[in-house]
Amino acid sequence: MRRFILRRLVHGLLAVLVASVVIFGSLFLAPGSPVTALTAGRPVSAHTRRLLEAQYHLNDPFVVQYADWLGRAVQGDFGTSYVESESVSAVMAPRVDTTLLLVCMCSLLILGAGMLSGAVAALKRGFLGTAVVFAEAVGLGIPTFVASLLLIAVFSVQLGWFPVYGSGSGFLDELWHLTLPAIALALTSVAYIGRLTQASVEGELGKEHVTTATVRGLPRRRVIRRHVLRNAAIPVTTAAGIVIAYLVVGAAVVETAFSLNGLGALLVSAISQDDFPVIQAVSLIAVAAFVVIGFFVDVICARLDPRITLE
Amino acid sequence: MSSIAAYAGRRRRVRLAGAGDRVLVLCALVLVAMAIFVLFGSLIAPQDPNAVNLEIALQGPSSAHLFGTDATGRDIFSRVLAGARPSILGPILISLGATALGTLIGVLAAWKRGVSDTLLSRGMEILFAFPGLLLAMMAVAILGRGLTAPVVALAIANTPWVARIIRSAALRERSLPYVAAASVQGFSGLTICLRHVMPNIARTIWAQAALTFTYGMTDLLAINYLGLGVQPPTPDWGVLVNEGQNSILQGAPWETLFASVFIVLTIVSATVLSARLGGDDTAGIRA
Image (cartoon, rainbow over all chains, first blue to last red; front, side, top):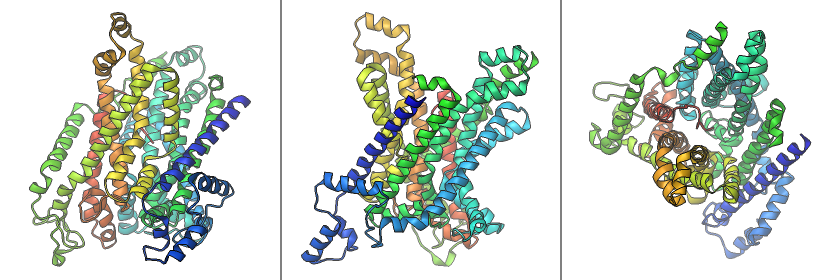
């Protein structure tokens, strides 16, 4: 187990390292000089240009710039925003909470509603099962931005139950403001995890070891819990990990739709303003989140099925 | 014993798309209609999709304007029809690119095994860490707005998912006796792959193409919705949903609503088609 964890850690670190080269390198290759973004396109004297280039280390070779950037990024310093003339961390700090809360609410929805609905659809026949299957089909086909606006149209404008825009202040108010965004962001993933759980549980139900357990006379409840759900949880955990890791980026869409002050909305505005340090920082965080969650998923799966550590 | 029978029976139960072949026919009809809109949308459109008339702004559906009018009095029905082309051609390009590349890599990895297989899967693992939407946004940051950057990025982002499914399908195929038989007869690996393996996994490839289309569409329209892709006044469906956002607050959700209906109809139809082609409807679902 320890060797397994160690190997996964090394894999994860390597993945983040390669991803950081991709993120930094691709934006480094972008045509046009960062000076244009820094001066918002206004013409500047050669002197000012040289000063800016020196201040932002724009003339160093790629490897030096990259090493410098990564070294600071590890310590939480992502450089200075081209647009806000503040440090990137200062620009991001007030926005982390919103995105984190949104992602947490979404994850709870995905794990709770998704797995529950899938298990119900697989284990219960009749009306309930059919209703769940139908709801999942609809959920899978609705893109996040469409869901956001439909929710706004129905629950904020028509019924007036929820606020239309903004993140709110105070924890409870924030929860209330983030309810619709969380539902919009989670919708597709809930449906997906539901479908997967259902297929996984159904697949497990048909296996020989389950038949054997039933024939041995174990109570159904115990068969379901110990033999069906535990095995079925493995592919579902892997998929749920990927889905949740991708939420940070998906948040860009809902945060824009609901005018929330989050990291995703920051990414979108940074892209439209060519604010490269911010783009690099948010992208790196998104990819790092993927790798970290992937690591925990692997550990959970290894606990569920110890054979995994042997591969 | 009865519970065993119940378990066994349950597995056979019809799944969602399941409601029978009627659903499939319906989905095929929707996709044919969309194809017609892609080809002739601007011709069928009863009015000029970009003709502004502020006097009739934000009207609800009527006989004159089937889907109502937008904030500048443009006919929404005409705009939605004209928008089929940019909204559907982009995802088709993404699907073609990702399916071609993914099939090539998948079959190659399954056939060669060894080092090239390991290298490919390591490279793909890195790519998995980049959600399609992030890759598309980074591409826009580098290459600028428009359709090209996000389409290329999304094709690349979807490639590993296709490659993974194709690789396992090709691996299964490879272990079958007919491949060994062909090999003994002296056929080259290339011939066996092209003439025998690929035709046998064609259904899987088509299912992946249809599925990639739906994911490409979801992400590409999201990019357009965010204002990073196709620019107004091109009536792309993602752009329409965005443009309608302010009208929602004024009690006229028509533009967003009707564009959304077209988006959801297209995606659901392609998903059902993919599930039918691929047999297992959860095999290739991506995050």
